[in-house]
Image (cartoon, rainbow, N blue to C red; front, side, top):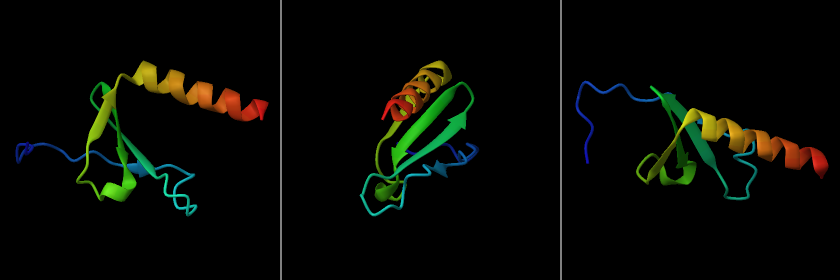
Length: 70
């Protein structure tokens, strides 16, 4: 499904862990009241997952907490 011509493209940012040769590359972007997540290796042509900002914050907090335990 194409976006309307007036739609603003989200500003994607790549994970700091992307590009390590492991093939697990993720990008995120924020629009309105949603955080978008996509696979970098799809070159913007794959699926995009949208989650609430609170859910994204909870997820990233848990990842950081688990990393601290390692």
